[in-house]
Length: 136
Image 1 (tube, rainbow, N blue to C red):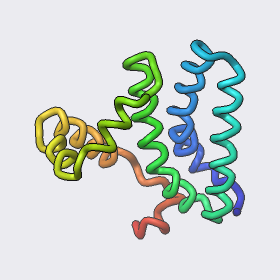
Image 2 (cartoon, helix red, strand yellow; image 1 turned 180 degrees about the vertical axis):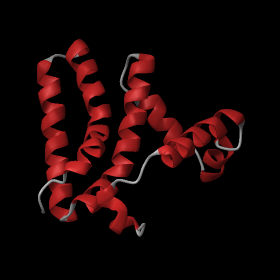
Image 3 (spheres, rainbow, N blue to C red; image 1 turned 120 degrees about the vertical axis):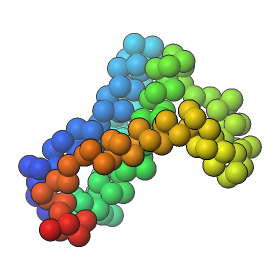
């Protein structure tokens, strides 16, 4: 893997925000052993992803779904002050694709989708990513 580009530092910080938030919650509720286990797991998963990606743009592209899921996980954890458990897994396992599409067709789902689109449209293209994204 090539040397870490200076322009990728903000993307790397955004990648770690949900993990940092979960670490704070874990330290408060479970103790430092849980924090160290979480951080070791995250570092190992990032190392495997970095070895598979071989360059920084591909690494961040592969990490994007993980960032979305960890942000949702952290939001649920801070909102309800407990980790997602059996109930949320049951809802996700028994929901059909039509029900997910239906959620995004009602107003709360549309607000969530519009917010995500606004954030992605407002984000600047980093100079290191211009060639990767086909932007000149």
